[in-house]
Length: 247
Image 1 (cartoon, rainbow, N blue to C red):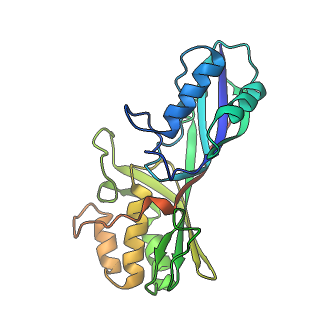
Image 2 (tube, rainbow, N blue to C red):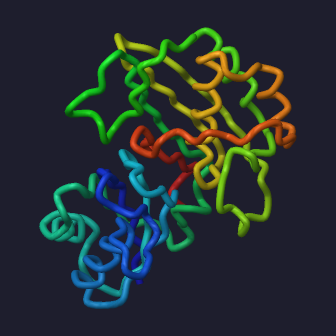
């Protein structure tokens, strides 16, 4: 039996997220369906991150085990021939049977894009969060430092009742602006459902002057000062997943 690791990208606009669901079109569901056809057996995939409806992937990682005699590169070619055009397999390789795309990962990095200008974009509307209000980027950067390290992110997530702990460790947050586009890069050991969107929503409220730095600090201590306004899914991208090795 082979253990195949795939790295892929996808446009999540027209999908109900990653996780396979009855009566819904999902990215993971389609990939399992196509892999099962190619390998001529029932295939179950493990993903590094279960992205929400509308969230995009630039470096999603999955693995699956198969009895097929097809090599990893042959599976990649076959998949790319029959997958929808908004899902593309970038890399394929055979890895140790111990490798697990979810549990072997040591960090994930998400990207979030905000278009900060007076008018929306006709072309980027499904790939950014358009904000016409002026944002104080200096305050946003100061507030972002509060998120670094280990914190209770229960207030920054939803539908996470099945998780054992709400504690996650943010390893790095990088914020940059080029013309009217603001880019956030957030790296953590793992993320709760909608956690990225919760963090961005709070940072935008800071940039608008709607909440204080002290309130952010208290929210990270688990104190429900206010309800979190979640950023839209359209601006979220699973950028990359890091592994110590493939074993």
